Image (cartoon, rainbow, N blue to C red; front, top):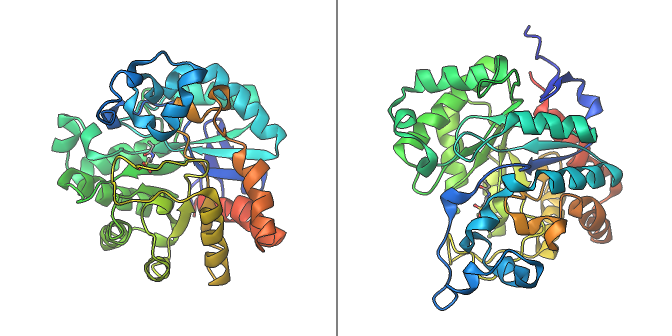
Length: 349
Ligand SMILES: CCC(=O)NCCS(=O)(=O)O
């Protein structure tokens, strides 16, 4: 039995799962999203160049990916520290930090933030989407990729003495590229060796989540210990959602706080409101999937910080939980979503 078995691995070391408390399973505290810059809508080119100030934040709410500065969350460490203190005060205990190779994972900063705030932080191993894979990464064999991922969890990552506690978010697009397929197979092989949690960023197509699970399963991955992220912008039909839920992964609604009329990466997508997200959670609970639901905000741009008028990392605890209760989700079930399900997912086998 490995020393990890029955424990959760944070950036400060191993902890007992009962210590985690309320957990957001998909956040970023420091990263860059420059890889996914999207040109502004025609006619708005000048607006996109406005100084990064409060009076321009209304534009960023609808166009977050069209301003270079907005994509540099790593410039906001002091503001994120304040937000984590507020998160702790609001009853939060743990944050899973999903920044992987390709979007500027910064483990020393995560460690310092955890020390400064008392919030448990769990870091992610592995690789983001194809466009961030280096040529060297693309040339690697599945075996080599597996060794790197295993080492990031078992030994250290990025030349630090810090270990990752989950694999992911592993980035995939649609269609899934060859390099992404290799990383998925390596993820499954590493998970088999480690008995660890895995979290996936699927492509923006309703068929993408199931296809990812198929690849993982074929490579020996443990679907019951795998989280499918971003379902709020990926599967919209209730029937399709139930078909996907049957496959057995965790079901994550992690874009709480985002309202965007034109989702630039796929204009077919109507991004739901928070009220619609809560309705979907209630539906999944009613259908018997209460043990599989997870929630988060996936903060990955500056404008979502409270410093810039955004909802911040405490939005779910402060605003969404009361709404869940109002819509008939019991306190017991809320606790499952915020405490028990993350704890079970994050504990090494
Ligand atoms: C790195 C953050 C991330 O991937 N967030 C998901 C954004 S979206 O695909 O849901 O638009």
